[in-house]
Length: 419
Image (tube, rainbow, N blue to C red; front, side, top):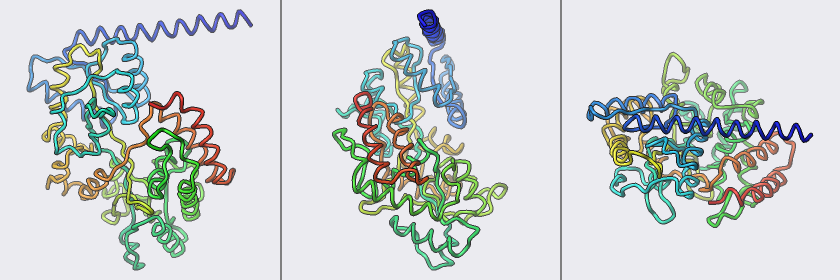
């Protein structure tokens, strides 16, 4: 046993050394380039590459290195680099749930207040501020959760667009009964992030929350129980295997015309709904903010931000690049690619509205948007809540017991998670 433990310790040390060598190599690259940007892959990576090319054209002497990384890899690399003060990166891209940790630990530089102007949607800018109001990150991707419904089906049954979750249930029941081959509603039921993301706007609409303003766990409340019971009632009109539905299944249900409503739709999913090569419901899907109930609509924000690490070697050039990236012209260029902007003026661009007919409604959702709890480790809390929600949805645990269990586990995790 002692020999095994010794081998494990050696392995752990070697892994740590390997990680530090990788960071050292990245730091050397940072000094070789005039600017090193750590960003996301996929469509965000393509957008950043286009912005980098444009910036280099305006500044021929500037050499920029762009790293395009998957979500989890990006988070781990940023956290390790900034914690160890390697100076590997000059500009970093962050999910808005990471910034409380990065700001709270003093890993980001305060940005000039002039980088955020009145044209930027206020709800998105707020996520980059510390409690003091100082700015540490700029919003570059205006993701916001929306609600989708078949306007043709509602019209054919004399139904109005849902104003609250009671209306959603009524529509699901009516349309589900009218056509047994069509689900009245669809959502992501997979435990963890998917089911939590769909549940939060319902929870907030009922006046509940995961944590209160002081960081106290409040998920075990009458309001949360009412919201969970609503989700469970909606499940009765969803596909039978909705418990294992992820983004692909929700998108597929909408595009095939197999679902009358979706409680969660994201900007990246929407263009396919109007693409005749992929959709049977072109022009028939309407989008709006998730409905309210006791309180008004509260769409969940999913903003991607940009900041400058405290140890950045080229902070001045980094700030100039951020000003360029968030300018109206570049935000418009990114929007053409399908990346949602964070500037109100871009949402009002006539050519873009013609291309993306839902932009006016998307702006309304963004302006009414609400952030997930601003804690250091939201991912851990989200995982706990997601497990409990699915246990309730699958009938393994009563809804009140599921919320009580989640509250206990989240409270135990809070010493590490609270900012």
